[in-house]
Amino acid sequence: MPTLLLTDRDVVDLLPVDSCIDIMADALRSVSDGSAQLPLRTILRLSGGVNAFGTMPATVADAIGAKVITVFPGNSDTPFDSHVGVVLLFGAQHGELLAIADASSITAIRTAAVSGLATRLLARPDAHDLAILGAGVLALPHLDAIRAVREVRRVRVWSRSVGRAREWAARAEEARGIRIEVCDAAQQAVDGADMVCTITASRVPVLESAWLAPGVHVNAVGASLPHARELDSATVASARFFVDRRESTLAESGDFLVPRSEGLITDSHIVAELGDLVTGRALGRTSASERTVFKSLGLAVEDVAALRVLYDRATASGRGTFIELGGLRHQ
Image (cartoon, rainbow, N blue to C red; front, top):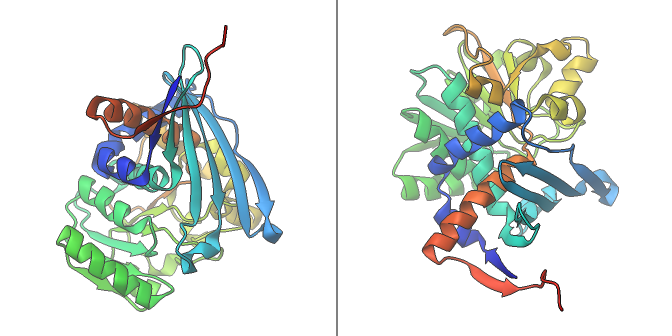
């Protein structure tokens, strides 16, 4: 039984961020309406809890699959990605292994696409000023995703490494033809911004409520562990708060769990899952002045749904490499 191998270049070429936003809308709709199956991810802590190995299975529509990945935050100072692994796709009728794809590129694209979806649903229609906190692999796809849903006229970026921020801004300006301001401080980057994306590896808050303008929308993306967060408690408590999946947030999100432990919020502070906004079962922004926060943890259904589309696009265009791994009974 032939299995299709897709490299990072195949993924990037076949799945532009803007084309992935509606794919993510369908996947998150299936989470909220209960048609998708996805247990909480299984995480093995490595190296004293700093690094991790995770497995995340899911079914969505006619797709069965899983992501298997390592997370090494310290890789930001090495040639390696912080997230390295594969996404697997199996056939729905016979369970055969259809495809193996690079997880780093799928993760970056689908994560940014989900932020783009949240911004489309929650940011003010006239939002145009974007701040990006973090200058790693998620920065460029997030720039693309936000520009796909809003007319972005100003972009500011901040990173704990000013040099890395300057390097990223130069590459992004050349690749996308948009001016990017590099800021020395996070507060400077978000001052007056309409949209903020936090995509750092920080375990302590990099964003404070006092810095944020009325009516801002925040995509909180970087922290995905119970003890790690990018937002201070006041930012979460003062905002209308949305998530990709309620169950995952209550189990895994430090951005939510820390202010809850401080008594500032309760579980009812979660207004809705993003899929509920897609279906219209929940109301998003209710005024131009209120703050909204979308907490993104990342879900396996997003990876599997993305690979399902990638498989169809690759087989139609002749991309990727087929290999024989077995899977057929020998008579």
